[in-house]
Image 1 (cartoon, rainbow over the protein chains, first blue to last red):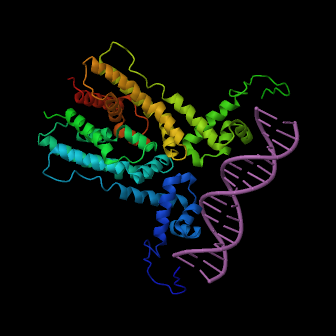
Image 2: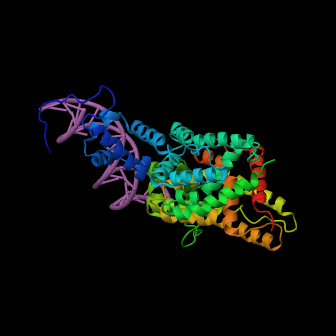
Image 3: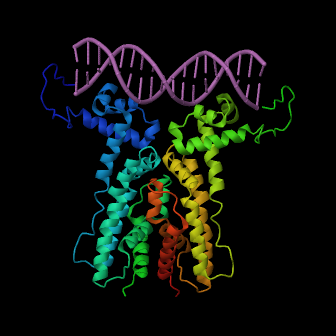
Amino acid sequence: MAKTTTAKISETAATGDAPTGKRRAIVEAAARVFLTAGYGLASMDAIAAEAGVSKQTVYSHFGAKDALFEAIVQGKCAELMAPVQLPGVPGQHHKTALGELARRFLATIFASANMALFRVVVAESGRFPELAAAFYRAGPATAVDNLSGYLAELDRAGAIGVADPTASAKLFFAMLRGDLYLRRLLDLTPEPPAAEIEPLVRQAVAAFLAAHAPD
Amino acid sequence: MAKTTTAKISETAATGDAPTGKRRAIVEAAARVFLTAGYGLASMDAIAAEAGVSKQTVYSHFGAKDALFEAIVQGKCAELMAPVQLPGVPGQHHKTALGELARRFLATIFASANMALFRVVVAESGRFPELAAAFYRAGPATAVDNLSGYLAELDRAGAIGVADPTASAKLFFAMLRGDLYLRRLLDLTPEPPAAEIEPLVRQAVAAFLAAHAPD
DNA sequence: GTCTATAAAAGGATAGAC
DNA sequence: GTCTATCCTTTTATAGAC
């Protein structure tokens, strides 16, 4: 609809960005297809059709199926883990701060888009080891780094007792993932509402603090 | 080799078991191919070749690709989770018993064969929801059931304080999986030796007991 | 039951016009 | 840059001989 006929509007930046929006359409379509069908069963035909462009256009932009897959997954890794940052408010009590972090963490990792990404990365970890490493760095490793710094502060302040901040941070997130993470990975249960994660947060924070009493 | 020519030895039970051992060969070959390539990229040709039989023989036994996949995964689910049973020795101290259970649990879930199975089940959970459910029941659910019964006993005996045995059992296994489970899922690290899981066991048991003090 | 073809379709990738 | 049409390979599944 709305043909521009022969007039060539120069809206294309040399390398990357939206020629007419087709590249963006391809990226979004590829994300949908790859994250639902998986790498093996996703077809370039299906991606082109979903994007509303020809297959050749897809190849012009990304060259090959594996390159397109890598581009999609790398992009998703960068964007989806952003919310899991440091506790936030500086003056608040550490129990409150940990609870806040826990809620944001669980909301992020249990989100359907994030679960779909993780499933695909896990499935293709053998064929695309760099993607698995990128996912781990962008997600779990970043979360642990942030929390361990905060735990070290709390230990210095005498609020809690933490001998190995990194190990304790890993333990904290592990307690939060819990059994529900397995059920989400296996697609046995839908994205849980806030009411359902609240008991998990309480259990994990309480257990963590009990295991890290000061002194 | 060793032709039986026309003589038909009646060693074939009506439905399931080894005609000449070919069915077994197909099952083992299909397991290898499916667990390394994944469902989408695994081909019936590759399975037949790996088994050393013709493709038609594979189809004669299992009918279709998805049926073969289901048979393989169901079989693996049943066999691989067997070692994760109750603590074992009846008279021992609960701290020792939990440590023993923890070691067996981690050795089981971190085993390469088990990780490969889990990756495939996760990847295909959308297309084969029954397999995902079967895996969860045979593995995590069974482990939790066993432990929660033991925890309830310990609580009645006053050894530890457990308000919700199921929730506490889930927490225990969650602490054990920890960060290393993610790294194993993503194939970022090989099967860890006993020396590497020992600190995790100690950390988890200590934290669990600290969080479940009696009274 | 098992094998050697073969059918029928789908997939990744490319050529050439506009 | 984008499209249509096409090449070649692989794939699932089946027919028919032994």
